[in-house]
Every structure is written in C-alpha cells, then in structure tokens.
Amino acid sequence: LWSIEDPRVVEHLISSLYHDTEPKLRRLAACGLGLSQSSEAINPLIEALADVDDRVRWDAAVALAKIGSPAIHALVIAMQYGGELVRVGAVNALAWIRDWRTVRTLTTVLRDKDAGVRARAAFALGWIGSTQAVEPLLQALQDGDAEVRGQAAAALGWLRDERAVLHLSAVLDDPSTWVAYAALDALSTMGTSDALDVLQSACLHANERVAERAQQAVKQHGLHIPAKKAHSGGAEKSGHLLWLETSAEFPQQRRCQIVLRSEELS
Image 1 (spheres, one colour):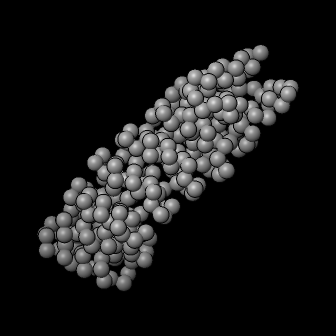
Image 2: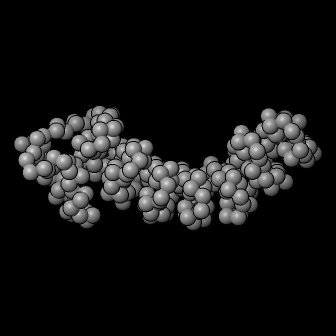
Image 3: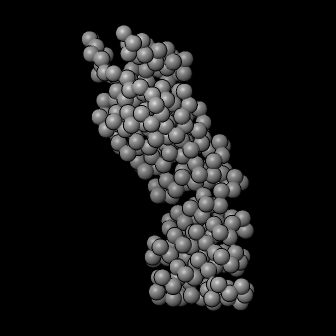
C-alpha cells in the first residue's frame, strides 16, 4: 500500500498502525506514513512513540523525521507533555530533523525528570550543532546520571567549542569510567591545541583505563605520549591533575601545564 502514490492509502496505514496486532506490520505502516509525508500521519505517529514494541517506536520516530518541519510543532508539544516513551521518541525525531529553532526548547528538556529523556536531549543538542547549547550542556556534565553526563560530554565534542575544554578535563575524574571515556573522545574530536594538551596530560592519569584510552587518542593524533617520571614529595600521585586542583582559572591552568611540560623535558 505505501508504495502506491495515492492519498487514500494514508488512512489505511494509520488504521494498521493503530490496530494491527503484528509489530512488523505496525513498523511497515509507520515507514509508509513517513514516506507519505502526510500531515495526517503526524499525530498517529506520535502516539506510536508509546507502542509496546521498541522497534515500532523507533520506526515511528524515523517516520516523523522524514515528515520533517511540518511535524516540529507537534513534536515539541509531545516532548514537553507526553509520557516518558513519547518524550524520548519526540526528542529523537527532533534530533534527526536538525532544525536550529528547536534548540532552545531542547535545552529545557535537559531538566526533564527522566534521565533517559535528558540523555537523548543532550544527544539532540550536539547533533543539531548549535553553539547556543554549549552552556546548558556544560551544566549537564554535573547531572546525577552517568548516561546524561556521558552524552553531554560527547555532544560538547561535536560542537567543538573551546569553552568546553576545561570542563571536559575535569570530567576525566568522573566516578564512571565510561563518562571519562566520553570526555576523552570529545577532546579528541575537538582536536584543538588546548584539547590535545589535556589529552597528553591524561596519559598519566591515575586511572589506568583512562590513561590507556588517552594514549590511544594521542597516538591517533600523531603526538608523543609523555613519559612517567619519578618525583619526590608525592607530586607523582596527583600527576596531570595537579593543575586542575590548583585553580579553575584559565591563566593559572596554562602556567601549571608549562610546569608539567618542563618536568617531562628534564
């Protein structure tokens, strides 16, 4: 049916999406409605974001993304007032539509009560690519949920904004190693001079897994891995994090990085 270019087909696909007991057929109905790009399909597809089958939910979100701009208004409402599954699906669809006009609303979703919704909002903001999202994403690095923190770190890497470097360097000490990995990957994606400085310093991180991941990233950029030196007075215990513990201010950070480099050369 959905290969037939006839508007009358839409109502039959909607009926199948609502009533068919076989998930695969509901998935095909969602795909067909997305290809139809009919405005009549928007609300049924949004309702399908709460389907009991996760594959149907996914295909409904993809279909809404194919409809594109005409679906944005309804998706924003669903993102704010729908149930948890609907909110997640709406955020995914908005991410794939990639319309900068949705950025401000998506930043408010970073405060959603559900961690899964907040994580998808962080993904969406990074994927859309607007620098308006930098400050809200920096705040999301302090979220109580590890998935949200990790996705916020990844999104900041995609945005490649220099303001994120110092914040991402602090995330290397996150209780979750996976969040630290996300911060390392973000710094590597940014690839700026300051980001690469932090990556090199992270090669000496106290967490061996973080240090190993940093070394892999440094090699990919063709940089040298700093050698570990024996120091007296317990300086080695703080390692590359010495400058982070000193001050959060950028000038002092730079001075401490210079000290670390001079130690490597000695």
